[in-house]
Structures are given as C-alpha cells and as structure tokens.
Image: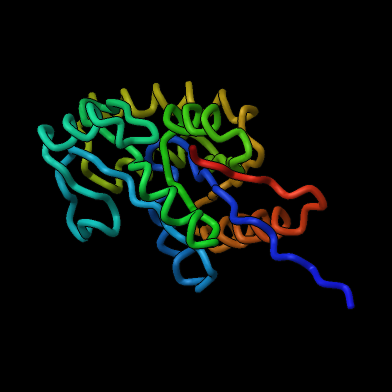
Length: 203
C-alpha cells in the first residue's frame, strides 16, 4: 500500500505596507480553523483600542525588549516609526516543532531578514489596489497625525516597489478582504502539494 508522508510544516511570511490590512487578514485567517500556528510579534508601541496582549502583539517595555535583543532572543528586530518590533525565535520554533504551518505577519524590512535566515519560507506580499485606497485606510484608522501619515505613505511607496522580492502577491481591494483571504489560503494549500516540499528550518 502506498504511504504518503505529510508535507513538512511551512513558515509563511505575510507582509506589506502599513495600513494594507495585514491585521484584518490575520483575524480572518484565524477563523478558517486550519492547523496553523500564528506567531506573535513583540513591540514596544502602546496597545491600541481592541488589541490584546499576547494575541495581537506581545507588548513589552523598552527595557525588556532591549534585554531580549542582547540575549539574541529575536529572529529579527527593527525600529519602525520610532518603536521596536521583533519576532521572538521561540514563537517560530514552537510552531514548527509542533508540526503546524507558522503564519508570521511582519513588515517588509523584517521579511527581508527572515527570508535571508530561512530561505525556504513562503513569502506573501499584500498590496492595496491603489495608493488612494491605502491613504483612505490610514485616515480611517485615525491613529496617525498628518505628518505621520505622509511618512507612512512615502515608506509604503518604497515598500510597494519591492513586491517582486516575494513569492506571491495578494491584492486587498476595498471591501474585498474575503477574496484576499481565499487567495492566501489557496497559496498555502498549493505549497503543501509541492512535489519538492519546502523545508523551513530555524537553527
């Protein structure tokens, strides 16, 4: 009898510019009830309304974050808009060791570092249908002042120019998040069917 071994766990990077809808996508992906492990990023920024510590982010003060950096406990870390963000190594390691696909939401700068450290990671870039849509989403969030929004839009344009560095692109159009979720789910399903599976290893 033919015995088919299960595909090894994937490390899936979900990236894109600020305001493109990565957090909303993550919430919808969790509702699909797939055997996925959602890695939680650490940050020194303040918690926003509706966010939960340990679920949306690991909210840390700068001293704790700095000590973790000194102990090399982050897979990658960077300062973004004046706040620190980092991916704890144990978040990724625990997920992969459990045999589940790890979903990692991370900014474009961090995605570059993770791809370099784990070349077999699957990288997905979320992008808006237009810069006007992105500007409107940032305005609806009401968490940035006008100069901050201008900076985010400038950085977003630079990040959008790097879409070709990723394996896949998913367009998140206004009022079409459901399609973006279907696309991400389909990408992961297709990757699990590869004849030569990716072997994501964290040393």
